[in-house]
Amino acid sequence: MTFYQELQLNQAGSKNLLKKSETVKEKSYHILVYLVKIAVTMAFCFLFVTIFSILFGNENSIVGVVVLLCLMVFRNADLGIHTGQSTMLLALFFVIMTVCPHLANQLSPVLGMLLNIAALAVLILFGCHNPFMFNQSTLVLGYLLLYGYDVTGKSYQMRLTGMALGAALTCFVFYRNHKNRTYKRNLNDLVQEFDISSSRTKWQLCQIICIPAVLCIAELCNMPRAMWAGIAAMSAILPFMEDMQYRVRKRIVGNIAGVICFTVLYFLLPSSIYTYIGILGGIGVGLSAKYGWQAVFNTFGALAIATESYGLKGAVGLRVIQNVFGVVFALIFCSMFYWLMSKKKETVVTVAAK
Image (tube, rainbow, N blue to C red):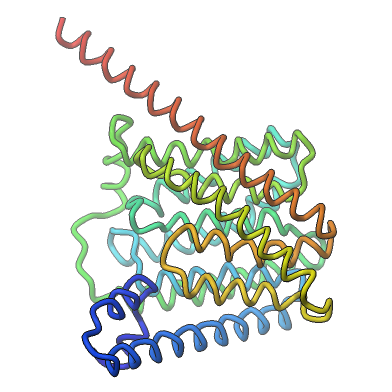
């Protein structure tokens, strides 16, 4: 494996190489490559988002984050169907992420929930057909970030331009990287494979219904940063309940640990470098292969931004409440949904047997 090829590995792949190292020299080499990868990735991400902020305004820096996520994921990940159709779907996804979150913010929480359900249905049913590729962590996360950092007026016009540029970049990179691959399935196959009795479809429906419901309840309760609850729910919803229970535990513990670490840093560090705590969190995420540690360091960036608006006490309280609410609601909702679907299946089987 070349130096460049090793740079392309994810955290788990890099750490697997470290575990398999037989000599100190070999382990030192893999550590060096891993650190270089983290440094290069952080520098590129920082530069990319900074350029978007300069071009489209600081209030649209989140557009740079969403576009960056899509570029980094879809240069390798696919949608499991014909490349041409996948490219058109990606363009459609960008339209949905640009328009629907903005419109939902203009509506009442209940009407906004209905629009969010319709939007997420398209993103998840056609973009997240394979739950273990975690495309939802890109598409749904991007949707929620744009929902949570909505803008109006001239800023929204700039957002339209930024997202159009992002769509063009993502579709170009995706098509270039996947055009020579052969797929046996097409868009029609995705429609035909929709099956309410399958674990995949039940997981998709939980994502589609539960996340907008979480946002709606948080907004009806006048809780700021409702997107935090939505992101927590999205992260916890998996096809199997055992995996969900694990994620819920790790998310809650990870966020509490992250809040404690952030608070300690907040009091130890001078106020002039508070904004860099978020960058420290990004480095931590890059070094973390396990979900629990990622939850810890993801808290840093969120709190670094929120403390500017709500103060430390308010931001910490919101972070804990929204995350606990999001994952617990998701666990209860999916448990009930899966139970109802299993009862329905038993009823159908019983009727058929008679």
